[in-house]
Length: 202
Image (cartoon, rainbow, N blue to C red; front, top):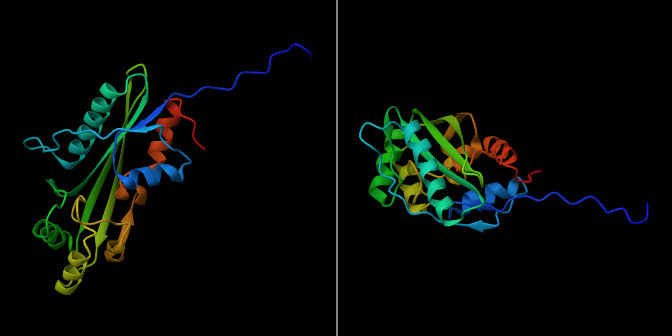
């Protein structure tokens, strides 16, 4: 009918990714999501005394989200943290060859767990959280395999000293859980939380 206004298009809040990780940005793209902004946060990621891997991941994701929310008020904030745990031990992010080698030697021939936590803060300040837990088993690594992997440099800055999206996937003979969570952003949990926060997702 003439004069009728067309229905207004739905509006969606601005999405801020609280991470400078290219891996998380690429994983978001698999969901058809491009954040409006990327805000890198700088928080102390040191484990607390007696803190276990699961709690460490959840705490850091929430702290990163809160830090980004202070810089981008009125937005939907998405933050994440991925922790590799061997029993109660939190494996570090490998920043040097010696650390990477120690991590690989510890993971060789055994199972470990990867905890990938995400935190979403909505414009009204509400915090939503989710956690993906994945069990990964590595084959027994020979000294030559470790030497070759170390020489390739894919371990640098990676939790537990390896990146499963690279050649280290060839070490994994069994995985139960979320592959994307091990990479750095569990897509099922991320999609669910972002939809609940009012972000347009496919």
